Length: 458
Image (cartoon, rainbow, N blue to C red):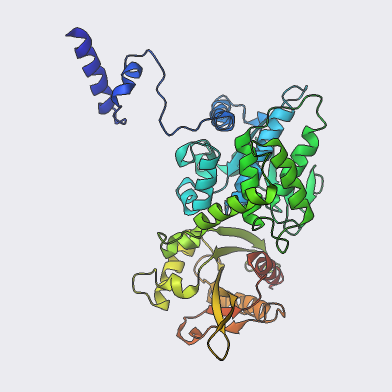
């Protein structure tokens, strides 16, 4: 009876401490003869490495050794490209320097809070393909940092930016070691090395190419796990529409071929692999039925502080969301399903983020028929929603001025060629919605236009 009583008491103690009840096969763990592991823990070298680096970083921070570490980070939108680029370069830095006189400790940081990660179903699926732990437990998220960013940033050995041309303001005092990006070069960290800006479909292409170039120059190559190679191909496939010639470059294809040759899929044709990945991940990316408007707004969100020449308001906070469904469908996901409700939900979100000017970009396709009613094609329509607040950094008069500055910048851009949406007469003060048929005018195009206009505001 004594062993049974001891087991019962130990199990009771586990449950009393608030931990999850264990299954019968976990009895060995309760008795201390083996180490219990959650059944949803990732498998394979890459998951183990990522989980180890996260634990190692926390241990070093606890022991005052933050200065040993390099953080590789993408943008706060946290898409698959940004996440994969960060993971790839962190893995490379750690392994490429491990047998040198100056080994580096590097970890990927996702600048997306944990509660927003599942707003991107494609990321969740890609991590499953890579055999990573459930609930993103292998990854370090911004809300898991044990110290305020502005103090931690100056303690680190340095940071590396991927899929983003400049650091967020809270990281601006960090030592920027390298930058890899496929956006516009804004001149940040001119001394960084490598510092690569290139027009390709995916930033992962740039990072993977640099990784392979350096790997092949090493006296002895380190182990490249198939799970990471699969993640790299997934990111490139999704961003390039399976290497669609209209969306990709020769560099995307050449790099993908080099990655594929090292993977377990080396005997398959590249286009077959990329089509398969893009199809599955693309379907997951479009599976947004479960998300309410607030989730859609924060799902792909980027913000930036912009300095202005105005002594009245030297800094303005801009926010940009990108939503792949129409404004009409977004409105249907509000409680009252009316346009006013969209702006109420939007106002609550931007207030939470302390945003002065916000731009929401959406896109959808409409069917075009001929006179006989025969479908000719599907045409891409983009919508731009502009809102300026007067309750955070700017007063009512300044908000009016900023709204006009941003309004004129959008209306004056010839490529956008915007038209007012049909219901602009129902909108409130400093609210506006346009439509445009410019298929290539995504957030990447509109964001610099707004930023330049605000920077010139006096």
